[in-house]
Each structure stands twice: as structure tokens, then as C-alpha cells.
Image (cartoon, rainbow, N blue to C red):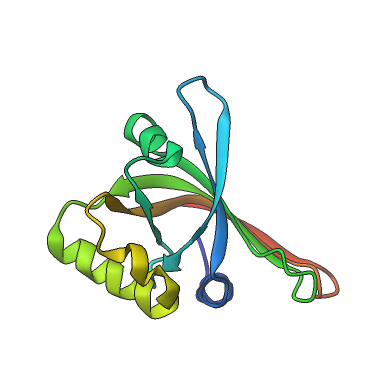
Amino acid sequence: MITDEQKQQVLNLLRTEFICVASTIGSNGFPESAALAFTTFDDLTIAFQTPNTTRKYKNLQTNAHVSIVVGWDVQKMLTVQYEGEARELTDEQEINKTRMAQLAKNPASKKYAYLPENKYFVVTPKWLRYTDLQKHPTDIFEVSF
């Protein structure tokens, strides 16, 4: 179970970072990773968009498990490792809510936001690990959902 303080620490990092690395599993069973813009919601879900022609889109059609890493700034020394299940959004209200959140955080995403091949996913966390290497002692915690 995550405490309110821990949740706020994770949200603070997820809200200030713009790019993550997401890894999916290919049909050959090997991981495939991609850097992408993302946004997050108060419930710690992570959302992203991707064209339906990408490897990650095809991978998520057959295996919804995804691993995400956020944070690699050597000045901040904060990271979140995140594992969860991705769900493609099909409801227009959900898509629009996610699109607006994505655009608010990442305005450069506008050129992709309305393309018909562009699809939105929301990832529900199953496990995460937060690390703050600037604190002494190091602040590390893991949470399973």
C-alpha cells in the first residue's frame, strides 16, 4: 500500500518529467523500448499516445504488460521504475480527456494529437519503485498494487 506522502513524491516526479522510456514485449518474446512523451493522472496512471503503425502499438495488442522508467537527470537523481498494464482507449470522452491532459503537459504533441492513426493508452500501475539518490540515507521505496 502506498502512503499519501509516497504517492505525492511519485506524482511530483511524474508531473515534472516530460519523457519516459516504455518497454513492451515483441512477438519474439524480446523487450522493445521507446522514448515517448507521457502524462499522468492523480491515480498514478500514465497515459501516452502512439500511432497504430509502431512496434509498441502492435506489441500492446497481444501483451498489455509495459515497463516504464521516468527520470534520468543527474542533477535531480530521482527515478521511478513502473510496471503495469496498458489499455487502449476507445471511448471518445476518455480519449479527449487524455488528449487534453497530454497537450497541457506536452504542447509539442499537438501535431500528433488528432491524427486518425494516433491511439491513446492508459497504464495502470501494478508495481513501482521510487528512488531519490540525493537524500541521505537514500530514499527508496517499492509499492505493489
